[in-house]
Structures are given as structure tokens and as C-alpha cells.
Length: 468
Image (cartoon, rainbow, N blue to C red):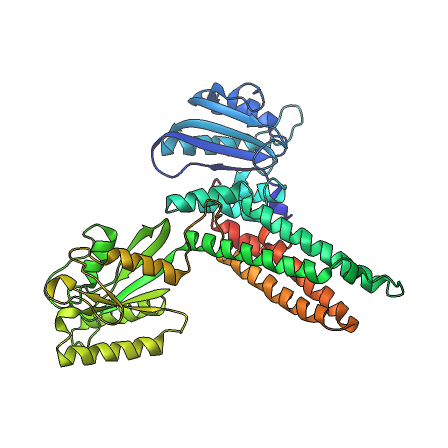
């Protein structure tokens, strides 16, 4: 632990603004005297008590519920005091200031500050204390933030499963299996004079194969969980008046973008997050791609290309009513060539043929045909977006995950592949096998925080809200 982890901390634990109830939270060691000072009485552990919250003159700042959680039976593993007051911002700021003031006041018995070093908590510091005191692991701590930030019901339910330990349980099972296999390999290395072949008798090949199979299952679920958390970024691109803004409005079910017959109406990107089967899809409408002398439109087109280059998928929108125009087809071909040049092969470009309602034979041999005006073909487009994102119909057991979890599991997979190669080789490769298994174990342990750096912890918890 760092030195700051020993400081008692306090913060407003509810969102900024006005509300019916607001919470001020204090966490630290031996805060009993602070409880007496603020509430004018001792509190029964883990029992809500209606009481006044007192200022330095003994007058009530407010009245509400106070709950005292003695260590270690609290969220952080330290003594915790929660003051549930009326949710006005001024009231909560007064309560927080009073906590800090009371912590600095002298205890008449000890002639020392009641709670030396009491300070305002950093973002995520309460959850960080819970992690450091082994109340939750790192994956569960991240699930707290993911539950708060969830943008869909499916994401919220999956984050709740991760918070309850579903993801961690599978990670711990992987780690334990890796440790067991490492033990066998290390035993073979430590006692080479023994005639017993530990690896053959223990079916090391079978254990490693089972490990790899289990890893693939966990990795697949983690990919699905990361998709639920992050969603996919989809950019609608194409020539002016192809119906890009109409398509955004149709997918969002609202008039978000201005739609007119005038080419170049959209000058800047317009973004809306929708959900498809619980997966967040961040849809971005962009300016029509063409050569323009208009300075404002040129800026919009440049921003469109910037958005395209950062996309997870691109909807290349074509206008079925102009497919007989030679110039239009030529311009589409230029855009297609530029997309192929600017985008990596991993980013799919989906050809979408719009305005099917305006022509007699509304089908095209390539891509998807739809009408943003009538909604025909939108369901097929939604299914295609989920398919290119790699989403599968979510089983009830999907848990939330982050990209760092996916990357860690991919490193585990790479180390296990190398371990398989060394195991298939001769006995001289056993030390290399042991090293690959050690690296695989370290990568797994990064997910739950058993093996990680302080820098990583700083990055993770700094993204939390203050008071959580």
C-alpha cells in the first residue's frame, strides 16, 4: 500500500445536483470518536439511526440516517460512517466540511486530532480500499464502475454478475489449473533423478488441452462482455443525399439529424447511441463525401474521414435512385477505393443500398437493400451489425468484461500455445515449459489484481466517480 492508503477519507457519495437524499461517506481506522462528534451519540453497528448531524457549535446542520459499519464488516474493510441527509448540494457540502473539521479537532482525552489526516477521497478511492483490503478483487472493482456506467439493461445485468464474482470465479479456476500443472512441471525439474515421470502419469498433455479448451470458453464470454461494455462504433458514410441522416434517424427512432433535399445539409458529425439486443451501438452520421469548394463543408468532410478512420464498422450508403448516373457511380468507386486505402482489413465496410421505396425493383446484387424512409430492411441491417461485431445471442451467464481482460486472456492463450510446443518437445524443453506456464499464470492474475502494477491500479481507479 502507498502512504495515502493509510489516510482516513471522506466524500459526497451521491451524484452532483439536487435530490431527495444525499450521502456523505467516511472511511478509516478507528473513527468511533468522529461518530460521537458528528452525531452526538454512539451508534449501533450496521443499524440505521435517525439523528441530527451537528456542527462545531452543537447545532444541527441537518437530520437524517446515520449508519456505522465497524471494520472489517464494511465495504472498504475499514470503519465506515454513512450520513444520509437531504440531497441539497449546500447541505452535503456543509456535512463534508464538518467531517473534515471534526477530524482535525483535538480529542480531549488523547489531546490529538480525532482523525488525523482526514481528507477528501480521490476518484474511486473507496473501491480501491475495498480491493486493497481483500473485500473484492480487481475485476469486481471494475464491475462497480461498469454497473454505474451501463448504457443498456443487458450491460447492467452482466456487470451485476461480474460484481457478484461470476467472472472472477472462472478466472480463479483457470489460475488454479495453471498452478497445478506448474507444480507437476516444477516437480519434474526439481527431482530429475527420480524414475517416476510425473508429467506422463499426471496426463500433463490432457491437463493442458483442457486448460486451453476452458480458456477459449472464458475468452469468448469475455469478448461478449467487452462488447456489452464498449459497444461498437458505426459510421455512416457516402455521397450527399444518399440518406445517411435519414438512416441515423430511422435507427435511433427519433429526428436527430436534419434531413432536406439540399445536398450538403449535414456539415458536422451527429452521434447517437442505440442498442441492438442489449449491445450499445454508437452510430455516427457524417457529412456527404465529395469535392467541395465550400470551406465549412470541407471541414465537415475532413471530420467525416476522421470518424471513418476510427470506426469499428462503416456503413457505405448508396442511393438506388441514382445508380444509372455515370458520375454518381464513378464517385462511389472513388469513395470505395479511399475506404480500402484508409481502413485496415479488420474494419468491415458494409454496402447498404438505400431508397428501396422509390424504385420498382428494389434489390441489388451486393450488400443490403433497405428504405430508411419506410424502415424496410432495417432489421436485416441490425442483424448484420451484430454479426460483424462478433455478437452471439447472449446466454444468461454473460458477465461484463473490459478490453484489458480480453488482452490478458489472449496473452494466456499465446503462452499456452508455446507451452504445448515445449511439452511436445523433449525433456530439455521442460524449463521453457515451466516459464510459459508462469507467464500464463501472471497474465491470468492481472485480471483479478493478484499480479499487477500500481500504475495500472492508478489508471483503473482514477476513472471512477468520487465517493465510490
